[in-house]
Image 1 (spheres, rainbow, N blue to C red):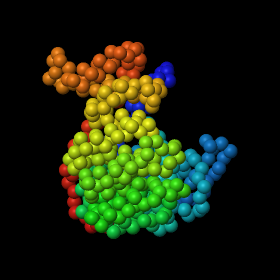
Image 2: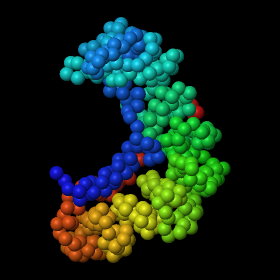
Image 3: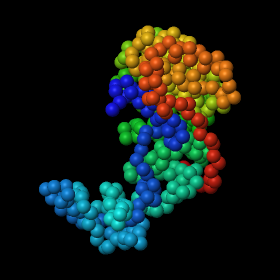
Length: 418
């Protein structure tokens, strides 16, 4: 069973692995989401639109049953064709006549039903799902369909459409930019609905893809607005990302000066400006993964190195710098090893993991002489307890530089914008 030390390293590795997964597979400014309705439908063997009839609530969960009347069949299996009425082995709180979508998978000859998804009285979700492109269709084509439903009044539809974007690659969303109405995106950013707060970062980024100079100024004003400590600034990182997509390096220099360089050396833990500092760090990571050609690797590395001097963020910055193969601060970090704020066990482990990554970064053509950075890394490792170094090495299987996902050309088809 791993000790505390290995758990700490697993945390470092997990944070890096999470970043890598998001880079390759999901929207960089969206929260994790469950499988979408179209994905669930594609994975199901049976799917029906049903009407609630009754629910028998036994004393034990295993005794509960619910009866539905089947109105429409959306998917059937040769092994199972739904009867006019179906009974599922769980209770449900509903009133007679309520509509639901229920899906099931055949496992070892038995049908396992998922929890029902409530439909409105008009059954609008049925047409939405029925007309949705399947997951096998080109992603840009699928997103063009779901784009039309992001502001739908039906929450099931609207939330599912957003989930499709949350799982989409940035490159596919970027291809859709010409079809996006900047005016609508501005309206979405202004929407006070608290349920839409989680989308604000995504909408900020989206405005950066489809907006113009006027929108860049709008985003700058939102970013630079006085910080009210009683109100959240959820989504500010996406607005920073959108602003920089429109303003490029001059915009980055402005944000670094305003949100980083102008601050005093130390901030209290409850200082509201810390949130913006973290948002800028997140945005630097976004730019590295998707906009290196626009900003340049050294520009982004230089900005991220500043975070090594901020105790609140130094441990996260060192992970990003290792991921980016930036060995410039090697001497700075090894000299700081064991000194505040690098004196805790977890901080030491992160420096050692960074140094091990540096030592490992050796060209395949290197024969006997190590590159300068790798030689310095090895010299530092030789001064440490070998058992400690080995324990760090065992825990950092995923601590490796992320590879920028290759851009793929999807067979997009033209559809109406929103």
